[in-house]
Image (cartoon, rainbow, N blue to C red; front, side, top):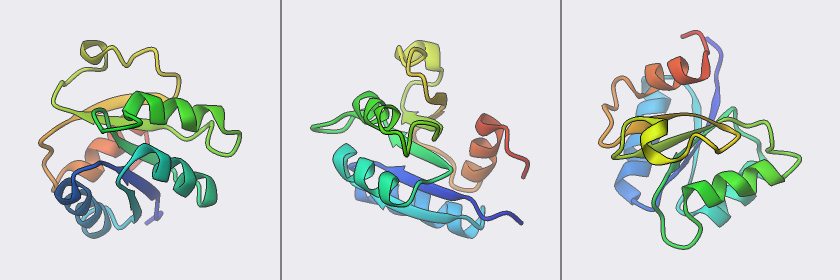
Length: 126
C-alpha cells in the first residue's frame, strides 16, 4: 500500500488528533499536523505533503488564506487542498475559486471513512 503524506490543519486539538489517528490507522498514511495557517505553510514547505486537509475557519490566517499561501510558494504550489467545514459543497462555501482546492469534507467527519473520502476527492486509488 502506498503511504501518502497528509498535513492536517485545524485550530481544534481534538479534530487534529482524531483526523491524525484515523488517517494513520485506517489509511496507513503518514500524518503531520499544524494548529494554524502560518505553521501549516512552514510545515508544508519543509516536508511537502501529498494533500492538505484544511479547516476553513481558523483565527489569524484562515483556510482560504492558508491555501493562498501554499499556492504562492513554488514548493507547495501543486499540493491539493481539501477544506473541512460544516458546509458540504465547494460551491456552498465560496471556495470554488481557490485554485488548489479539490473538495470539501463536512464536519463532523466520520473517522472510519476519512481516508476513503480523501481518496475519492483526490482521485487516488485506495
